[in-house]
Image (tube, rainbow, N blue to C red; front, side):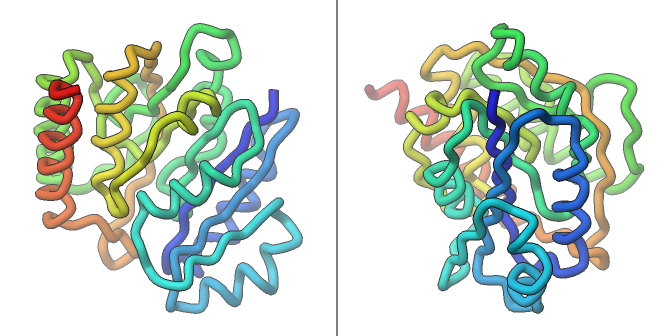
Length: 232
């Protein structure tokens, strides 16, 4: 089974090369690596062109910054694998967890698998209390609409059957893409699994980008895409 690894990337010159190296070392028999650069302005594009291009299958460059959802949309459209896995470019999520994340898909039990930062005994860097509260609030709100019992709706670590995720029309350009995907997966009634993953979160000084404004957009997306489902 071929796994397409889609890496959305924006201003990650300090980590993108390390991420690619870790992805290439992950225990996969057949893989395709697709990097989507969302108009980075910090020198990331130079790193991609000079040191990463020969290590990956494809790099897609957005001419303007459009957001994570737009980057995923481009990456999913370009993927040719049987399974599509999302890998952030900042090393918060480790490619060493690929076997755990992919097992329910490989064994035919799941159509989509989400890596949860709040499940299991994997190592976690201890960071922001209010981020955890925000994540749990958004997960609870999403679960109330979808009637599924996720523990980490906002996770950036996901894997899908390629035909399933390609059948979903992603509308969100930014971080609202996470609740949008969950709402649309739930609407399809597909088999979703969660697995515990390790997590090495970053501080804002280290490059973390998500902010309270993204939390408001996530609330909007939860209402929009779940209520939209009820109208159809």
